Image (cartoon, rainbow, N blue to C red; front, side, top):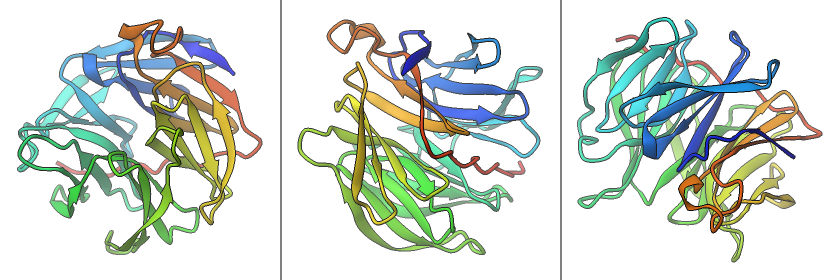
Length: 281
């Protein structure tokens, strides 16, 4: 395990590989920053600072789709910068989007943070721009993923310390039959970011757990990898390389000497490329 980049993020999140550019993007939610890492050059830089971003997807045309504070949604590219598409989303005005994922048809599943007047929610943004509420109440929706056969959709609820599994309908984008698939054990921390590799294993980052954990397709814990930071937030694959984000950069060394860094490590099983969103505004 090595450090790919160290910007001491307060809440590093949302690592996203851009295969066209050969860059890994990730965000620091609390400071409204976005960074890009070039593995070939082994260099990283800040590419954006502004309104808070909660999650990102890669659009079909290569731009990033940003899900932001107050339910704002914007497009971003290095050439054009930020292009606001939606100033707010009904029901999200007093909170922010937290984690998002595109499905194979270009839709985007998006969670929102809980706020004083209500818990989190799960939305689906369709390619025609319409948004639908899928789940009215989620403790704190977080990492999401699809099984390789696209039969299941996984949703992390950090507050409930669980990963839920739903039946997924690719044709309609509907999810149904939610059940608790994985529960975090005592001392493992709270489940945060999530990804699934090419063999259907689930990889979960653990807030306050100093680890990432891997489960087989039946939900059995098969591997634990410890990191030198308390709050591990998210992870993604680039072939067999795993990039892992972390939080706590403003609280070193209590949160870990490398808290807030972007880590990288090698896995035996390759990951799967993320689907691209196809939202039209």
